[in-house]
Image 1 (cartoon, one colour):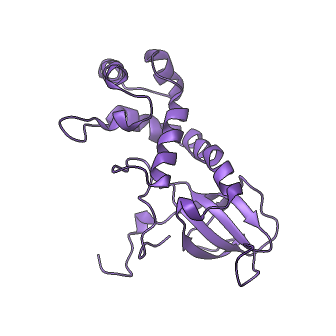
Image 2: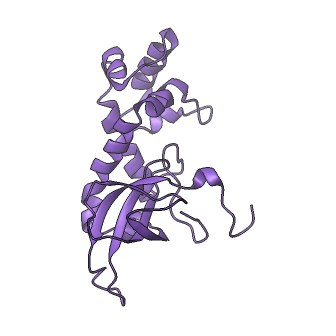
Length: 194
């Protein structure tokens, strides 16, 4: 792929608002409003300029290529370090909301996750999942695919809340504290596009 090109599936269509700054950032030269958001598909951290003032934290907003009602311009991707304190505080709630809203997709992750190499399975990247948890998950899914988060929790009693595990993993990936990115888009690079 050449510089300046992007893949259609890499673009976020919807995002959840993490923070809304009606007068912009305090250290910014311009005093235009700013919205920090979390993309629903790849957990992309984004910053945008709103069209309207009625933006609520936690609100789901269309940010795709079509006509946008509330966003005029996507400024670009953000790194975790560039999030406001308000965005950092709202981030776990937003991640959890996305995961719960796309339950089938994330249950499918438990059903189809595979080894990363001969020593490590991708499920072991979830915080708190060690060899015993992994063995219990694989044994349960070999008997029958998981159908929901409740099914996972019921059939793998050693496992904590699956939504909490996934949320913690996405946070680790957004902070850039890992070599493997299994749920979120890798951290912001200079030539990435929203």
